[in-house]
Amino acid sequence: MTTTTLAGSNACGDDCVYNDDSCTAYEFENDQKPFLPELQPFTLETCDWTGEVGMAIRYRYLQEDNRLRPGGPGYSGYSQWRWNPHVSLTYKDTITGYIEGIDASTFNEELPILPIDENRWDMLQYYVDVKLMELGDGEVHARYGRQTLLYGDQHVISPLGWANTYRNFEGFKAYYEGDTWKVDAFAVQPVNDAARGTFPPQQVNTFDTPDQSEWVSGVYATYGGLERGKLDLYWIWDIENEPTANRQDGNRHTFGARYYGTKAITGCGETVERTWKYDVQGAAQFGEDDFVSGGNDLDVFAGFFNAQIGHTWNNVSMKPTVFALYYLGTGDQDPTDGRDSTYFSLYPLGHAYWGILDNFSGQNLVDYSIGSTIAPTEKLTLLSQWHWFDKHRSQDFIYNIAGAPLGPGPAGTQDSHIGTELDLVATYAVNKNLTLQTGYSWFWYGDAVQQTALNRGDASQFYFLANYQF
Image (cartoon, rainbow, N blue to C red; front, side):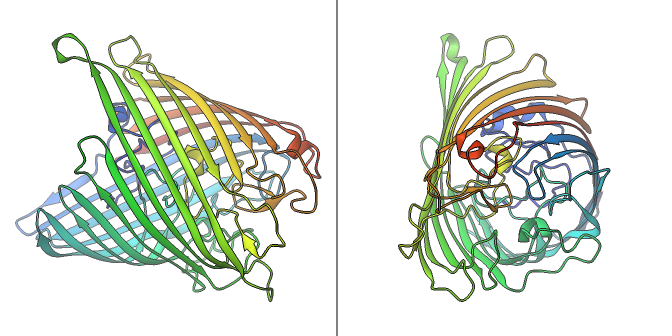
């Protein structure tokens, strides 16, 4: 939970494989990591000091058509570059200083750039981390400064590595890491446009500054002492004092839990022939919202539930895996009852769960998904995944990836079916430093889109990326 180096690191955390570009729902255990490159920074060691210098550079080309994106619909083909140099220095394994820069740019776009697309010559992270004490079988640390946050499977808080800019915060964090428990406590403010959800982007060519109107605080704990699997428990408190169209305002408390793990099926000689993977998570939100400036506060009662299961044949050629996923983010049935039941999905990596075309933010959304992976070679993995998307409440809006409400919501009666998506992704690890990936997505819109003012043709997206790191 305390990974500091984003550039080229496993930014999906302990429980989800991440190659700095695409984290997909089936990848929620560590046994996929051999397919991924490892960070190889320059290191420094003396009697009292240790340090490292490294960097990552990514090129990505995208073509997209008719996404439910801000500034759309329409077609756009564009290129993106992202450069992340970093340096760290540690004194006597006690005090660490870390700095990571970013230069993220977008070229030849035909639609307006998004908050996640561009951030020129800025500081992604800079903080001081101090070891306070040893406690039991672990250590207690305190950290202050600009930093990224990554928790669990990234359903609630993620550094958003798929984006061209990442997502960062500024403030305080204290954490404990032991053999059985890992606990983080934090109080931070969103910094860059990707974290603040600002559209159009406000800080592309200026030094990023924290959003003074919002605080994100909470505790995230992981217990690893169970016989099978692990248990995550968390509380996140989001306070926004300035009303915005596509973010919650007022305050919300999110209380959640997650249980996940694997079960190996052995054959003769105790060989692991097959592996089951399981992951169940849910959260409830409470608080107050005021979506209309000057209006009455709305009592919040919302939440989400996610469940996924996968099965891998370990001793079969290409090690095939099949998996299934179910997700529900609640919507609001009656806007006049003084209660808001639309789940606010906080700061997730939606790209991993709600389709790689990135149409949705997880609000008022039901997702039924199945998929499979194969590994034709040690370096090559192929993914196929299909999604069926519905509204949870037909009376509520469709919410795009930025959280903006789309279409006639409470005023009209409409169908619940949003559409279906098919994703195909190929990832090739050339060596320790270079990864190539390409993907294609088709989205066929359902009646919830076609019978409203959102009427449009079906959507598609192609991308190719190359990520180099050392």
